[in-house]
Amino acid sequence: MSGWLALVGGAEWREGCSFDRTLLDAAGNPEVTILPTAAAYEHPDRAVAWAENYFGKLGGTAKGLMVLSRTDAEDKAHAHAVRASKFLYLSGGSPMHLRSVLKESAVWDALVAAWSDGAVLAGSSAGARVLCDPMVDPRGGAFTLGLGLVAQVAVIPHHDTWSPDKARRTITLAPQGLPVAAIDEQTALLRSPAGEWSVEGAGQVVVFQDGHEAGLSALPR
Image (cartoon, rainbow, N blue to C red; front, side):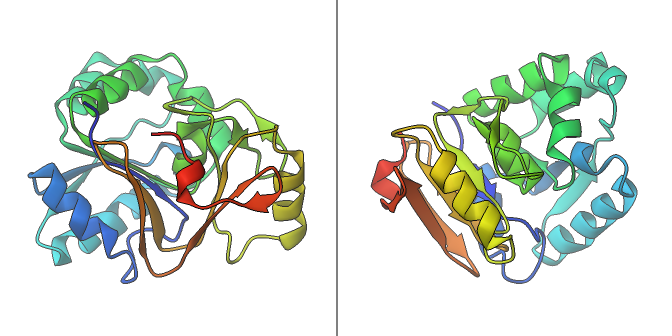
């Protein structure tokens, strides 16, 4: 049975992210492995430092794993560290870079195996986009291929601050029957090991299907 999954709407590791306490408790391990891959060109060391400070205040610890390039993603030591982790967190940044680095890599295979064995997995903004398939392209709101850990679900992160025009375009372009979860910043769409969905954090999540609000029941178990 897979572990907990958190699809976060962005602005991660801030006071409103109450769900991180839930995830730490679920992991049963205070150390969080941070993958700042999506922030490779946006000072990934700063993202890790922010996470270290944040999780320290929650009584846990965070450790950065600098998987920033395709070569890093094929590194056996990195894959081993991911496989051994009980709580993995993909930061925000560029979903296109994150996808190209992780797709069909040793680190990706290790991440899927760890989650399948019960590890907690969180992805914020770019991380949330890429974990799903199809993936919402932030450049225009259309759809492209994601990594497909969660199939037949798409997410719009930063929904409370994103362009309303892009959001409407995404909802309009969504294939028939596809649930699209619009997630506010500092908010998580959570999936329990039993496949049950819930929302926690500072904002809200609205699920759209066929152009209409559909509720969490539209999401696959």
